[in-house]
Length: 571
Image 1 (cartoon, rainbow, N blue to C red):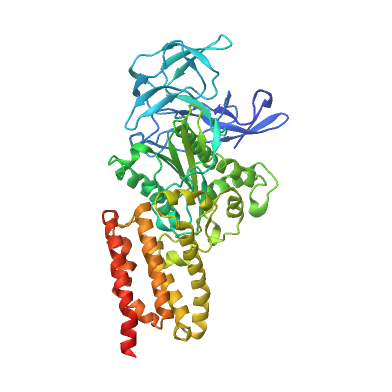
Image 2 (tube, rainbow, N blue to C red):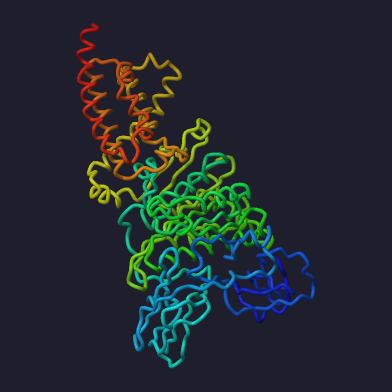
């Protein structure tokens, strides 16, 4: 925190440079004769009398083609091992890079804000857009195809008021200001995560918002890493907000080595990592999520589908609490500032599926992890987040301790996108998805109630139908809900394989219920070879064996057809 005089020449949220190293800061409070600023860097060496220079602009970042594949801090400054273990005070931006530019506009053409001017040939083709804050204008000059640095002008426009404006491959945008879009669109399809329990039971729509709350050791980071690796988003933005250094080091070490399963290219070619660990200045932690969502909106404006993984918003909220305390603001619940809920809403509301200014469709899907103290889902950050998101994946400590991953509790989780996505699953060949999903959830709910009863009277005292319910629920947990992120075969499950597995499990449940009603004891059903196969169907029937799942139907029908005769002979 910095307190300085001469408040008249500064504005709230204005970016400033402080001291001989021009440390980056931001004005957060104005008084009658002074102002308070938060400094986003180590303030060691600052002393009374050091100069404070205002930029006249809000805190902004530079957006351009050099972002993909990069690892940055919370202010979008590159983290390069060659620069040493620490960012040097006052460091700015990336070293000059040159990009191959191909124009797509002609002289005399009218350009609107957000319209495409050309393309840049990087590992993944990117578009050069007219900055959204710029007025419409006429192209008076455009650079020929060739290599240019991010700051060199590639187009000159004559604006309506007669002024001229030069456009470069990069442009600045304030991190706290949402980038405009032509129109917000309703949810039309899911963001496929490749995790059965999420896609089948609690899907998240493309352009929607999801929260992942869970106590220490429940697998939040592992789940978000799995989503980053296997989701069908075009671009992945991963922001580690206040996480421990050892957790971020795993991400930074593993992600650059991964191969994109769809393209066969390195996954980092469509990934941006923003690492803001817990030992970095707390003020920078507060700004890091705004940096991440601004980068996500930049790629959304290019007509791409972006997934933003924020790990974790609890650390961000703690930064808000610490800054608020230093300002002497009246604390709210659990010491958090009274505006916690509005800040969370502002962040999550920047997700969405939109029609861009360029006329294409893009989306930003936000998946925010929450670290509630002691796993208490009634604490303020979790409760306020629930009001902002449509999908809630609650991680369960008991499941995690039992080595059941993903440790999503199916009775505490929900999805508000289910009805909107039913049509999509119908098109994919599963018209019964809604009914099947409902049956699984009812079965899992009955399991909890019957397990309480079984602990009192014993399993053998339960009627056969209730014993079968517990047996079928165990099968659903093993065959559908359990999925190891470290399995070479089952770490990803396509919608086609999910549909095949789900249909087979539902058919088993129906046949098992009919057999018990005919007098077959549940123990006989548990001993069927096909049931043992179904328990490990995810591991034994990978993506290349989807057709083999259909072949199991004949075995299923055959083994159940023999049960009544065996039972009758045994009697």
